[in-house]
Length: 467
Image 1 (cartoon, rainbow, N blue to C red):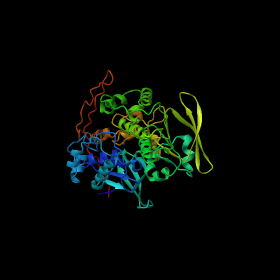
Image 2 (image 1 turned 120 degrees about the vertical axis):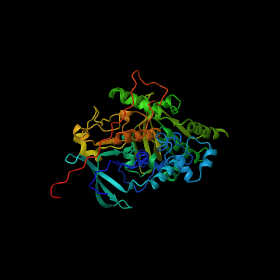
Image 3 (image 1 turned 135 degrees about the vertical axis):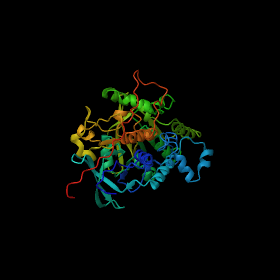
Image 4 (image 1 turned 90 degrees about the vertical axis):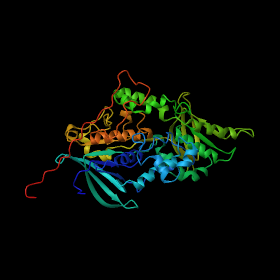
């Protein structure tokens, strides 16, 4: 192909969400798309692929099924290629293991032709003379060194650069000077043996990752000499809201309702809905209790302390072998100190800043009162009409929680969001989507799904006279 011909779509980042988009875009032969990822290969939270840990959505929430059940890129198609359909059928597992989901995504990556790993996108700019985006990238060698520079032109760009580990400010100095093992949960498996060698371990974080890591470490510590603390800011080690009607907050119906609310209302709602996405799976809580109870059978209590409602005010190192945490109980308004030999920060993830990649587009971006990018109901960044009026758009995946709600990082909405983006890019119902997805009616005025406009024919750049 002519490298100067604009592509219809360039995806930046290849995590589950852009991989979903690539899988659904694959059969659209009229759509010219490519996806770039700076890593050499696909990897989905490798530090948290603990034996037996499961994803918290059913296997139907794969990359494609909820938009196209007949897609060759479904999880069931993956099982068929591995001759594992019957074992899966008899296993009767609605929630698959994390390691199996990772293997499924890697299988898709091995077979989709539009994916380019080892390509780091450096900048995205708008060219007003050609009405296209310029996407500059660096092709990386296997060791990560720069190998070549390149540029792609595109009418549409989809950002799926994912999230990054979130380390609270009071704990950041500990990570920056890691003489004592202080690691984020994202790197847990790579450091598990080092953590187990520590005399005392503290796990900070009361979500699913914190619970799974505490349980995994507990099972590997000798009875009576566990020497573990588990601390969390939330009021309790609370189960995730998993009732059937509660799960309807992760439907397109709720997403449309939430996106139509005012900014102050949306911000207030997100803060109050933590148990919808930051709680702990009930089976994990039961397994922790079972393990602790088993250790009381011979009398005595396990040497563990589980305390919710606690925040870390400050932290520092004692000599070179220990860490001192200064704690405050939120409700008691009391303070204490805890000395420990290793810390696991199960403090979650945050959306990666878009500023580095989109610095060249900053004059065109429209922001809200907190300087966050405004995002419309079709997952497009709200930009100056001089850009969007030319038919050019920037879409985002998993960067719109402030505008689209708690379902933003949920794998169950991946296929629906990808199909919505493709419908918007093509200007037609390439993937027919349901108009209703929940029994709950959110609000007195329902938000109707938007039908894409007819796709505009591609305009060609006129040749200069004499060429």
